[in-house]
Amino acid sequence: MQYADVVMAVLGAALLAWIADLVTGRRGFFATSLVSTTGAICGWFLCIRVFAAETMDQWGWVLWAMAGSAIGLVAYFLFRNKR
Image (cartoon, rainbow, N blue to C red):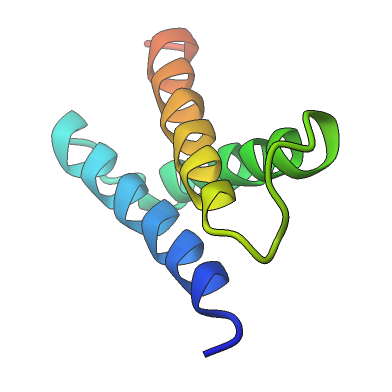
């Protein structure tokens, strides 16, 4: 499987979004999945392009993407408007 790491990153971001939606009790899976995906892309960008810590041939960037996704979700729930 040539793209197994990409599939795992996408599934991981979806899983984090689903868990965040369940924990908060909201029914906004689209919003959490959008934030989770954006955070994962930011984590990938930091790992691959900014810090050059990993390459796309290695699996370490998937951890960076999941960390970016988690940080994005935490920031989303901390700073969103609560009316």
